[in-house]
Length: 460
Ligand SMILES: *[C@@H]1O[C@H](CO)[C@@H](O)[C@H](O)[C@H]1NC(C)=O
Ligand SMILES: *[C@@H]1O[C@H](CO)[C@@H](O)[C@H](O)[C@H]1NC(C)=O
Ligand SMILES: *[C@@H]1O[C@H](CO)[C@@H](O)[C@H](O)[C@H]1NC(C)=O
Image (cartoon, rainbow, N blue to C red; front, side):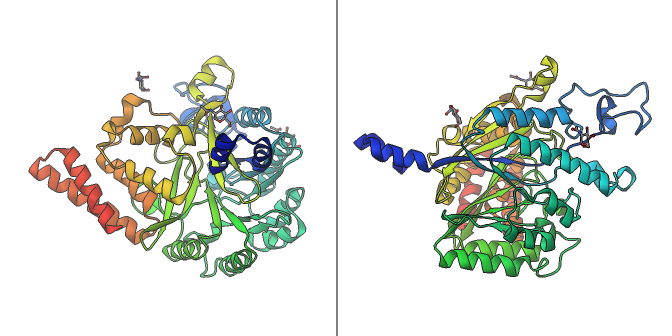
């Protein structure tokens, strides 16, 4: 933004050209959850599958239409329409694409509904070909999700058009890699967050920590900047409570936070998917906001636990050299109306800067935004209303904001601002006890909310 201000003040054409050349775009797409068994003749209570996979009774609930259903994973037509929409927008001045995993349907990991691994790899090849055609002159950087097939050698071959040899070495052994961009300051690090999960993690996450430390150290020495990209974000799910809300083990979560704190001067962006929702995270060091992570919503409309979302894809505007993120545009498909019309018209849902009135994305500007989320009771808070509407990609309209009460709003706030599990728990407890006392004394909830927010601010 500073660049633009200079431009406005001096109006010098050469400055304009130089700054214009620095501006680039990249897409972030995530969680396709492609389900080849989707059929408009399927039963929505059974994943919208064709009858040859599940006996369909006469009372079956039919999907609303060919672009998908909120109870089901994505049909090919939905994914194809997203690709078409990306191609028609900016496909020429896009620098690269981040593709953060879970390309295939949830159902494949279900033992009874599994599709053979060979077939899964084939389906991933279909998606890879689609993206290859859509972005014929750009690189796509894929991150592994937990619902993706695991034979990394084969995936490496499949993605060899995008991954250089150096990246391929670590991808094939650990599923993580770095894209070294020789003439640019910005380097891209893609993590295998599957190694941070409960079930299959060792302390060094398949040497990922060791490697990550080394590459970050090297970037710091060379005065380079980095993006960290992965499927599952650290911290907790803003829409869930309890143990299901956490993806990483506590140990890996803490290591991640430590590392981001240590290298916060060079980490200029963290990008994740997995939760299917639109949100963000802030990492603090001794009370100061030092880094941020953006969570992009999914292409699949299906949400397993906390309600669905409209399909979304996101375009970032950034400084091609340093990686500084200026803004992003969230595109979405209004699924119900697309199904009604029989036509998928992806539209702008919002631009970050104009939506939230923030001219650049920094840890401090996001901290200030998060603090605004707690200023009033949710339904009286225009900033929270906007955030909440975007969170499910416009599933909730303005008149449904009351669905998110104080405790729901606090779950969002605590997830955004407390990545560490213990701090997150404390944050929720503080909220809960203030709520309980408000019930006893029947004080105006708005006062309690402001009071509670102040307590939280002091703790921070
Ligand atoms: C996926 O690829 C297979 C084999 O090339 C092909 O038969 C199939 O039609 C493809 N599916 C889609 C949806 O393009
Ligand atoms: C949002 O961003 C897109 C892409 O950069 C642009 O085409 C559009 O005009 C912007 N809309 C607003 C309201 O700023
Ligand atoms: C909001 O959504 C609900 C449920 O889908 C619907 O009944 C209501 O009419 C909508 N309100 C507006 C203002 O669109």
